[in-house]
Amino acid sequence: MYGTVALRPPLRETEGESSNRMRAPTIQLAAISAVMAGMTVASLAAQTHKEYRYNVGPKAGVSVNNPYGSVSVKPSTGNFVVITAILASDKVEVDNALVGNRVEIQSHLLDGANDHNARVDYEILAPADASVTLHSSAGSLHAEKLHGDVDLEGAGANVDVRDITNAHVHVKTLNGPVFLTNVQDGHVEVDSLSGNVTLKGVNGPLVQVISTSGAISYVGDFGDHGDYRLTSHSGDIEAVVPDSTSADVSARTVRGEVHDDIPLQPKQHTSFVLKEGSAFWGTMGRAAVSSTVVLRSFSGKIHLRKRSEK
Amino acid sequence: MTCLELRESLVEAEDGSRPEQRAHLKDCPECAALVADLIVIACAAGELRAAHEPSPRVWNSIEIALRQEGLIKPQHSRHSLLPSFGSSWGWWRWLAPVAALLLIAAGIYVRQHSHSPTIARIEIPTPEHAAVSDPMIAGLNDEDLLQGISQQSPALRATYTDNLERVNQYIKDAKSTVDADPSDEDARRSLMEAYQQKAMLFELALDRSLP
Image 1 (tube, helix red, strand yellow):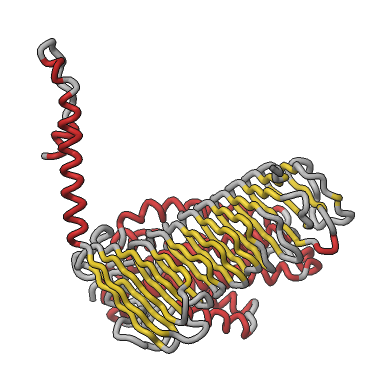
Image 2: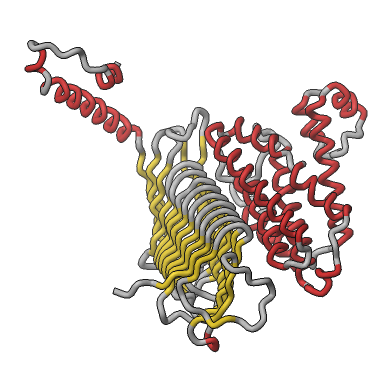
């Protein structure tokens, strides 16, 4: 019924009706607003807020398994975990337990649950040294300002990880985009089938991204003495680095193109044939502190660019 | 015996050799195809194992990963994270992780061949090797996986279909690159990564966060 009001095509305009021309949209807008407001109120009325708190020891674990909805983890100010859950309806409940030094949280779907009414959004405060494991099929996953290991997994989950130091960061998505920002001294492994992966200020002993068709963007300086491997079968790969970068960079594509805007010292010996336009290999900056950077694609473009200094 | 009962019975006799299984398989081409696929996978696994037994460290890593995933974790709480045989995913909820592990094993297999460039240069993939990998590409019951997703989360079917096509193309392209130059370590690595991507897709499909 409401849809009819909102979507009704405009009547043919006559002279007499023209005076109502400005009023009709206003009425429609008011009706839509009223409906939306009603739906919002009804939705909010069905929501339930729950809060749980656990005291934990050093290097605790936090594990969240949430089919629908978002999970966000931020550091707490002490050795405790606070979980705030917003449940969309009574078709879902939160199971949680402290097992040893690990807090386990599971959204438990009940009969009649679906992707709308079973949504749970979690805001979690955990000690900064906690190891965090988050699973969600469709919601967003967010972790920040931690120095424990971070393991995030979800088919369509949007993943956002930032300000992580000295930790393993493992991410797996099907088509959800992945953003990693300011991950220092990390062991980073990202696997995504078709989601785009964006790394900004990410460095460490190992930074590896594998994608089937997602684009990979790296903005940073490749640290020093690290192993950086960015691979996409058909997605484009772009690395944007400052002048100060020291790295041995090899790039290779089978059917795509490679572009190199930065002069590299060519390697004397290479393990593959350097075919113009489809591969390059060389050193930039100081070889003694170089990281190893490998950029590979099958049909995507690979572009190594210099970051413009402002 | 119904299709469901047959699938549950495969846990104990996966080759369908029991009389009641045989009776059902005789009349049910769908289940017969499934059992055939199971046998292919089991055989491929056997060949892989015989060819290159991964180090204990690999099995240990897999065990740790499975424990971390909660798949072989001891029961702590009343809500088990283990997939139920009674669930609508049925027995193949177990098959897919096995398939994923087999894909990883295939990746390890490929990787092991790439460790020694000298050996890699003189080793041409034999038909047996191709026989190991091809069924694992084509015979992983993609359709079964998609059917399971359709039953469990219909909205995700299109996404998984699309990504299955992409990753199968990845494997195909990577294989063709290896075939063109078997000594190319990068190409072998790509093939391993392609297998890993498909394994990940199966893992995600069976993710415990799926409703």
